[in-house]
Image (cartoon, rainbow, N blue to C red; front, side, top):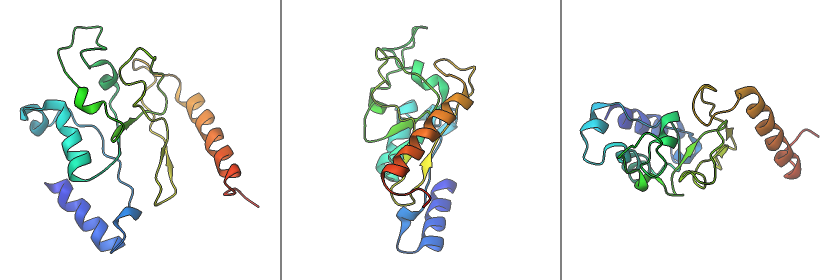
Length: 157
């Protein structure tokens, strides 16, 4: 409730009629009492992020990629099928998700926010499963963004 009020206040006060000019990237919640007690458990994030706020991206947590029962190597019974949808995607900039993983087609490595023109990266600790070194990932993704900018005429003169 506090976050909802803050978001409404921030977008209405600072940006008036253009709430899309605000970039909000929520972090996937799996520990709060609300998520733990909700019947949908972790998948309640989709209801809040997409259905309530209409966000199309969130910063994922490392264990999310290995917690779906179809991908789990530790016999997880967690069904995250409701999160495996292209209308709201997790942002992980330095992970390699193998094609056999349910998340392989859903994960975003760069979030391009159309209203602000920002390109956002979200690095996770390289000690996490599926992660690779942050510096190499950042260099590669920033090079890719620079090429896109040049191609679109957004670079320096």
